[in-house]
Image 1 (cartoon, rainbow, N blue to C red):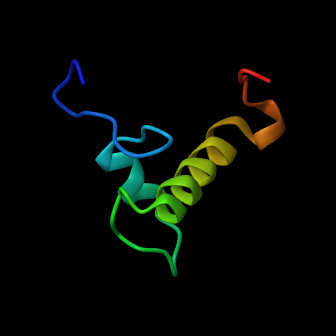
Image 2 (tube, rainbow, N blue to C red; image 1 turned 120 degrees about the horizontal axis):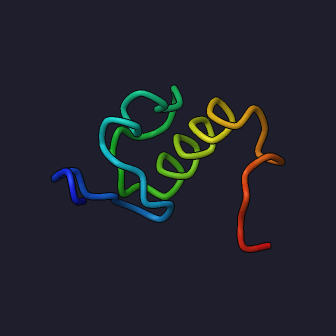
Image 3 (cartoon, rainbow, N blue to C red; image 1 turned 120 degrees about the vertical axis):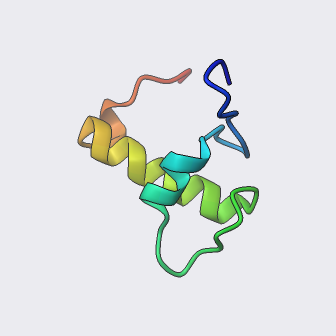
Length: 58
């Protein structure tokens, strides 16, 4: 948000990342829960190699 690109949706993804990691067959609506989660997971898997490598609250 500091750079003028606010995070959106359940997993707080920004528009450029959502568009880059959009999963075929899901909505292009960043607020659609399935589209938001799948794009966010695709980004995390690409960035960290596996969802298991992502630090989280659990």
